[in-house]
Image (cartoon, rainbow, N blue to C red; front, side, top):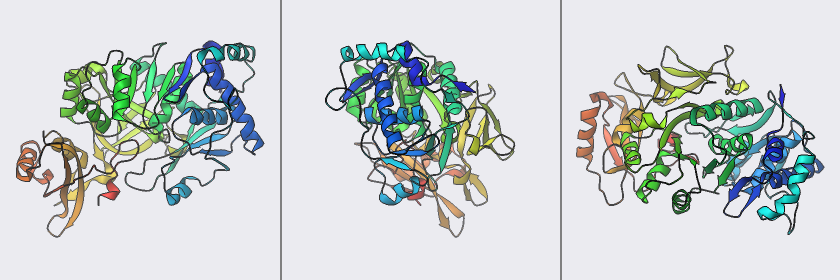
Length: 459
């Protein structure tokens, strides 16, 4: 099935509406379309064509968005690349790419394509309308993007996501969260991960505004939220905590702080609710094009923690507790022969039919013959008022086989009392789940750009 190209459709419908806002400047939809057309022509001159992989090694910016949409106009497959990768990591991700963009593509307009004022878009608006229907459509079965998994327990793996995956993901998210014509979704996440990239593409599908920051900076995000620039923001537990620590309260236009990327502690959610921050919990993964389940804001405010599948996602629990996902959001190459994605996550349904995650299958610690999910223990540790963040890993042990070991970071101005923390765990966990050893880290725990713990660096 072929559908109208998203960017051309948005530019025809709302040519002067802001497509992208960044600290360096903004582009309307007409300007973004003109820049993407210019970029597509340049890529074609450099040998890119339909189906070719084009690596985009640019930070979140107008230039990244131009390159992304240029690939889509051309039918090339975009491969977002984190510019912070080492040479070895970069080589792994670049396999199969025919072109690597380390510098911005040329953009039309004055001064070499610098962002123009809204008034400068007027002429482009008429051009977008005149050219309506001339842009090639998107074949929903075709590959649009290759995203590499975050590599929390192993090396990053490439996942080929189709136009259909992104379209259904956008529709599912819209049903779960709603979409306003004046939506302004803040992306302060890496666009080399599916969570950040989806914001740019969903906004183009909705013809709404993506507010893009190059990286998460607490004061900049706080200012955007306090100033009413943002209606939706995507966060992880650590970034939500930083905003609350910095004094975020009652953001005036924010209707949803979509928070995921790992476990979100009960105490953190209670702080967010007390501060008037409307949190919606989400569970997703690269192979399912971001969101799979979402917890309504009202449920979180009422103490709910489980989340319901998007209308276009089917979720079931295997006999061993593994979460399985099916539906048009799942990457074709990630499905087993029966059509289901084995996520590697462990979970269960509650009495209301909501999904509650309990950990990762590959991360289960077998201690004295008992299975321990690190995420469950971490959630308890992070409920303690002295603990900022925690990680639980196995350590070889002659008696237990694997000993449950906790690594914790203290909140600023607090100190960790190991015995008090162990007592806190004893009151909430079965004895075999209580950490045998508690280590205190002076620095932050290693995480991916999307906020997930890098457990392989802790073992």
